[in-house]
Length: 535
Ligand SMILES: Nc1ncnc2c1ncn2[C@@H]1O[C@H](COP(=O)(O)OP(=O)(O)OP(=O)(O)O)[C@@H](O)[C@H]1O
Image (cartoon, rainbow, N blue to C red; front, side, top):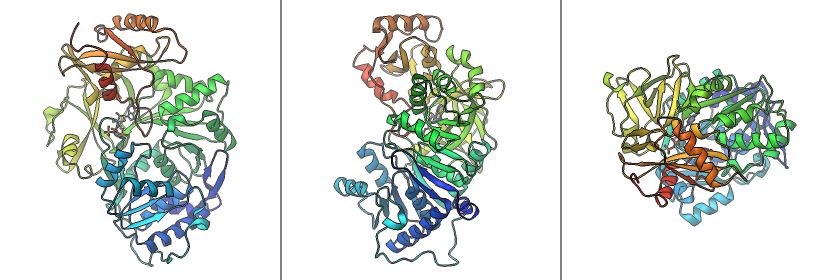
């Protein structure tokens, strides 16, 4: 990754690497970024950052973050990236688990660290002034000492960074990624053809922005609070997309929906956008349709499937997704597309127990539903300091390792993978398991329904399925929506047993993408409103 970024410093010094959008725009070229990296290397090394040091990096998206990330990698330190939108207690837990030795952050984060007792063992602390150019605003008086000539750069097996899962089904888990994992991610991202040198790409997710810079793109950073991506102002996003002639965009489904709704209301077409990448959760069919309506006819919308532990696994373009719309609406799940090159996917029997070693009898018959398992060069190291979670997620197979995605899915006859829901969120009724993504899309077209979440109330094996509905703003009354939902439910064998419909004002969602519904939380909420078991 570092090698690739350095390549663009030399190759296209005058091309804009980072364009901060919004009301205080600022552009940084690759040449300027290169000088910022040199400066940051000198400052970080002078402050005492050494190879292998785990370094919390809590700096908002922008050229500073880019320069610091490259500088840390050049110093062979290990950046630790934590989602800023997590609850404070979860941030503390992540930082403690990472056993940080150094901390690079903006003043507000340093203040929080001191007040809340985050990362008490940190020996090196570096403050980055908020939203200012590194070169001018960096504290002076620090002994500048860069890399000594001949110092080795990071190799493929060296630890590159520590990321965290988004924590939508439990506490976030630490994911150590080596340089070879990142290289494999970038090569698959490159093959998707969405990021080109010098092309303006807008990203609402910092790691994708860093990845785009590795391709020499002009990364447009919108003025938004990274703690709440879904609250980003769609009018400001549209303004950035137009002003900087953005050709590619990365955003999670919930934010794409917000953007598309704004465009529909104001009759806008985003005619510079040729490529939109969505990831983090299924791209619901109504969202995809709405989004397509705001793009050029030849624009591509790619829904990418993967996880922090192995990204990307599969991808599907909206036209192919649309071909499966009827199947999805009938309860087949969401098509994820074929596995990407070099990524082997198998479907194994559903179980909540660890599986130590691979054996042939783990695989389900072709087409049957089970847990999605992946073996690929992108599969990360075991979880940080969490042998229990690792045992539940990894299967050894000679010199390979299978990563259990914790997702339920299947293959179709064309070798395409389908998503049925998350394993831990399946609803276990007396009549068998119900999978959330085979149920919720059935109700996507019911008037007044914005989205739904299937949850179970009661003990596993005797759970009562409850459909929780989030209404369209200003929509019809509850009784009519309920009647329509139950009417649609009665038309499909797998939903015919549904009796309970509840209305919720706003679903709890994950901190990173604000797109994954936190169904375990909704299940507790529902349990207070319906009686368990059959009436
Ligand atoms: N295109 C997609 N379609 C369907 N689901 C997706 C897609 N992209 C990502 N996901 C979901 O996101 C999951 C990966 O999310 P991530 O790595 O951010 O953490 P998480 O698994 O949600 O976190 P935790 O394990 O802490 O709950 C996948 O396993 C899958 O459930």
